[in-house]
Image (cartoon, rainbow, N blue to C red; front, top):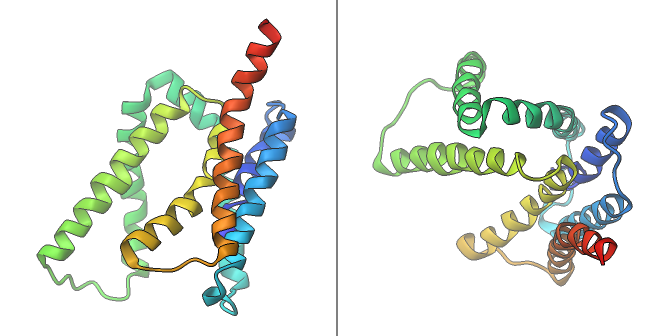
Length: 203
């Protein structure tokens, strides 16, 4: 799943280049490929995940990434028209309503066992992982290009692994650490290089 999510930077550039007339620059392709290689190294170094591949699961993750890439630019235009706060509120509200039927059908058990641990977890997921994350993402979408925002999604696996090491005590191999470094390096270069090229042309 992490490897397939690492394809998103390349998919964003590919979809924009061929379907939305948003020509990707050479550095988008180069650093997108580097970021994906970093994700591959990150996963290859995790031998605990070996032998657990599911073709259907892989197809669903990849399909979700492709849908995300096709909706990225129309979403960016909509945020520019109605503003990030309104879009965030509407998307969270409509998302909850549209997901409710699926949650009712797919839930294994409808019984809820309340506890303060569960309440804090639900609050954290609702406020930090959903509301705050989407507010920051939507605000960022209004100030950077779709290709760059797609490239930044390659940071997700790196942050996921780092947080697992810090909070869950998981360990990383040298190959996985190399993958994390490659992802961070590619993302940083893709963010800085356009400004450097613009300054070089103006001098």
